Length: 252
Image (cartoon, rainbow, N blue to C red; front, side, top):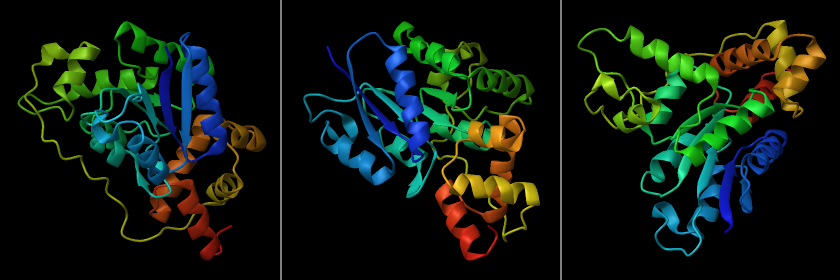
């Protein structure tokens, strides 16, 4: 039986990497559909049963969804697919609470960091077969830390169904609001540091985080921190937006 997978990722190199991860993760025959933006993903989904997956003969079984895209945010698609009978996994660079918990609220069944090693991502995706949520180690630790720090009487901002699957069901958290927590953005653009400008230059040329780290002689997680700072300072949500705005303002 063919297992259909849709990978929503705007970066071609990252998309190719995730395709390799999927092929290595599952022994079943599979068909991978690639989309670089929300519009393309929605068109593919419309041909495979629509947002509920009920009107097609061959629906998708797995979605890998990037959060920051040229035409919006992957959380929009997660919310639209709330009733779709498939496993939905976020694949992103962001490991902070401001992205993690809203993604879970929008229906993500797992959360993977693209900068994890190939072997780690394969191992996490294989958990789907065993009915376990795929979580990057750093995300699992963040969830543990978050729930240990929640003050008495406050409600953790995540879905109780997801908590049950991750082993946190003993928290007995009441149902949270379905509205995603808004991501605050700075009121005005800040100036990039020379290091951030260098990172942005490489990003605009299509280099991956690991490639940038190698070129600059720094760790990949340092590059990741630079990227998050760039997005915040430029008030953008994707590398494409960052590159365009930086070019217009003469930053690169």
